[in-house]
Length: 219
Ligand code: DX5
Ligand code: ZN
Image (cartoon, rainbow, N blue to C red; front, side, top):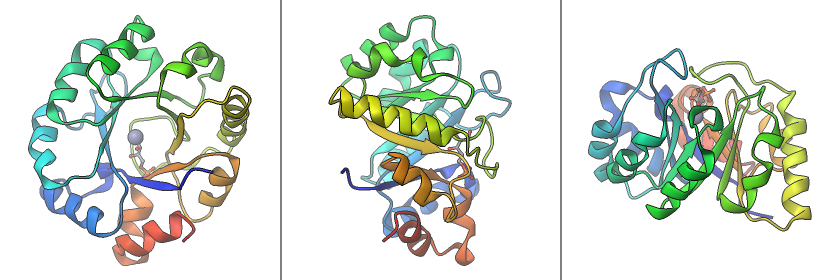
């Protein structure tokens, strides 16, 4: 059983203090930093790009778990790699050739993540599961923090875990969107080993990041 890791989303951080917020997350025990990149095209919101990530890179040694909600995504992969991304997660709906994008991320020596929206079936990625390091299961439609967890995705996590065990794959299963103290145990028991959270980590228990991270990973 893989250790449960927490990847706090900086989308819910104070954007005027991003460097300090990342340091707070590291001090609070985060395992990596989830960086939500949005282009206002693939999702109806705009956030940050490579120049900002490049500046944030020196604020922490923690891995940058970069979630690219942009399309077309292929031509920007190298920019995010150069900016300091450690895990580059793309949406299959955002590239004309998923295998080509996966091969590019591998060539750049970065961890390869593929993300599925709540309405995208596992079958879309079944034939590339042997080539990737992480599957990001969205439990909300991407674009904003603070949305309500969609319980129907728990079955998707269970089915993915079943395929992973049957085929002896080793990819991480990350879940993202509306994760809180009422659903963290459910998604972990279903098979998720990395939990993304923004609102819960920054807002609960008067913003006590360490307490919220420990509670989410059932410490
Ligand atoms: C949504 C992002 C998520 C989001 C998580 O499009 O991909 O990472 O920021 O935030 P919460 O935990 O507030 O749902
Ligand atoms: Zn995300």
